[in-house]
Length: 231
Image (tube, rainbow, N blue to C red; front, side):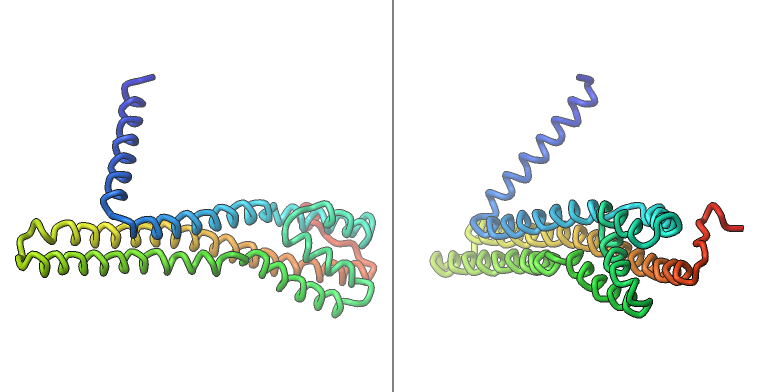
């Protein structure tokens, strides 16, 4: 192990020890903040895994569906959608299943199933936003408790010596810092999830329009021009 790597490990260990030390000094109110952070991170990780599994190469998938429509019609495209993961494939399959009933029925099926897929993508975010709000509030509650303890110490000793109030004020500041830090971490995770969901929804809506146009061409007896065939 190089001296630089050893230095990094020592620095990380030292930072971790400082965090643990400050956590212990923060008193019992640090535990609710930590629990809120852990639960929020668990939801964030579950969403990230789900969203990554739902993320596919949409452009390539659209071309594959168009090629399947050209070569085998709606049944071939349905089979391709059934073997492809992600919300775009599910929405495509719903539209293709109703394509024989007309374009209007296909559009309605796509719209309905698209709303369902959107709810699946956004599932759990309401709980993540709850922990984003709760973590700082728990920290502020610890702040209030710490200040109350500080004034109780002053009242009991009938003295305003700094040593009497230092511990209560320290607890107050540490719980505030812990709550704000937890809220910041979870807020970053929430925004990342929202941005990824927005991109997936935009791709789903754009590709759905392309699917309807492709179905219309197929029903008109025309070949669908693939990107490498255009021009």
